[in-house]
Every structure is written in structure tokens, then in C-alpha cells.
Amino acid sequence: MNNTTGILVWISLLTLMVLVLIIIGGLTRLTNSGLSMVDWKPLMGIIPPLTYQTWIEIFNNYKLTPEFQIINSKISLEEFKYIFWWEWFHRFFARFIGIVFIFPFIYFLLKKQLSKNILIILIFVFIFGLFQAIVGWWMVKSGLVDNPYVSAYRLAFHFANALIIFSILFWLSLSLFYGTNINQLRRKSIKHFFHISLILIFITIVSGSFMAGTDSGKSFNTFPLMNGQYFPEGYYLNIYGWKNIFENTVAINFNHRWLAVFTFLFISSIIIFLLTYKRRENNIFSLILVLFTLSLQIFLGILTLVYEVPLSFAIFHQTNAVLLLASMLFAYHRLIYK
Image 1: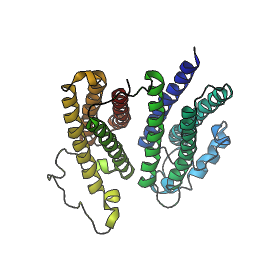
Image 2: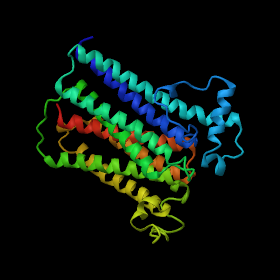
Image 3: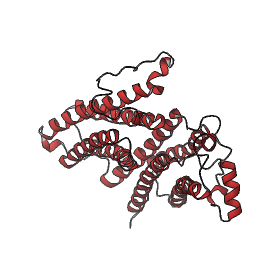
């Protein structure tokens, strides 16, 4: 195994682990487990409860939270253990990713096998990773004071940062595998299409975080109509002011579904065009992959809405959103590099 291959395997593993962590985070949220651990111990928090007495102490601490007092007042110790293990494993896996990152990083650094560009990128990944841990606790803390729900703003911020980390690592993996020899495009407009598409996908995914953080997905369970209307009553409420699109569940639901439809129509129409336009300039497989994940995403989104956000559809919808982002990055990379 040469130097580049070793680094490629390491970065690819990290990319996959971040994807798995995003899925675990989604399951933690969907099982309402995120507020079960009421403290943040970066080092000692890796040790789970090992005795009955420890479980009782942790359960008693949970009983002081708004979630227990308002929502889960009748929860048993065994039921508490279920949600606790989800959150504990979420944090444990995040720490494990940190270990998988730092030790090979030090090894490759000491062996002087990291180029300047890769080193800079990995330093940014490390900073984003530390920031992600802090944001994660900042998010959880928002649901431990008066309101038994985490802030939708902080949830969206946490998820957006995870997407950035995943995207950087995935792009680096592609560059290590395929190389970065520039492919001179005849039409810069194609590049602009990918830039706009990536922005649309990112914004649509983040808007989905507000759907999740406010439970807006459960407010209207028909598609395309909302309560029998294309443009529902209550879209704008004065009490929210400029925050209406972030806190009004009607507006959040409407915006996410039609932003998703616009993203689907915009990307699919141009992908189909690219598949029939000078094929030698395009990677057909990568474009078909984008079209597949895009179509699957809109289908999963409708199913998630219609069936009132069941765990299975919701987690597949979230996972495929990340895969859609990855497929678009893959297609863009194959387009600009030979």
C-alpha cells in the first residue's frame, strides 16, 4: 500500500463514519432520545452506567428536566435506558470518529506524507469537528432549561455543520481517488448549474431540519394540497414577524415541500439535458446517479409526509438527502476533473 492509498483509505473511512454518525443522530432525534443525557463530559462521558446505583442517579438527574416533567413523567427506568443508550451511542461514535481522525493524522504528519493542501483541509476538518461537538451540546442544552424541545435553529446549525464536514471529506476522497487534473469545460454555464444545484440541495436539506425541529412534518399530511389548499391559510402570522419562515409550522411545511419540488424540477431538467448533450464531456453514470437519488428523495419526502413521519421513512429520507448531496458532488467532481 503506497502513501496515497493509505491516506485515501483513511479519509474514505472517515467519510463513511461521518455518514453513519449523521444517520445515528437522526435516529437519536426520531426516537426522542437526544435529551436523555443532561450533562456533557467530553472525556468521562465515554463510560456508560455500569451499576444499578449509577443508573438511578442518572435517571434522577433526568427527572429534573422539562422533558421528564412535561412529556415523560410516567417513563420507567427500563424505558429511560432505551433513550439513554441511543444518545450515549451517538456521543460515543462521535468520539470514536475523533480517535480515527487524530491518530492516523499524527502518523501521516510525522511521516511527512501529507501534502500542504491536504494538511490545510484536514486542519479545517479538525476545527469543524471540535466546533460540531460544542454545537451539539449547545443544541442539547436548549432543551434542558424551560422548553422540553431543542432549538430548531441550533438543530439546523448542527446538521448543516455535519453536512459541511461530510462534504469536505467526501470531496477529498474523490480527489485522492480520481486526481485533480483540470478538465477544460467548453461551457462555464454547466459549472454554474452545479454550483446552483449544490446550494439548492443544501438549503433544502437545512429547511428539512426546521421541519424536524418543529415537528412541522406532522402538521399537514397531504400532498400537494395543504388542508385542501395549494397556499394554506396561516402561512404568515404576525406574532412571528421576520421569524415566520423559521417558526411558523405552516410556513415551514409549505416552504420545504415546494423548495424540494423546485430543486427537483431544476436539477432533473438540466441533468436530462446534459445526458443528451455532448456526452463525451459528461460522466453518464454520475448524472444518472444524481437523477436516481433526486427522484428517490422527492418520493421519500412525500411518503414521509403522507404517513405522518414514521421512523423508517423519516430516517431513509434524511439519509438519502446526504446521498443526494454526495451524488451531486461526485458528478461535479467528475465534470471538472479528468
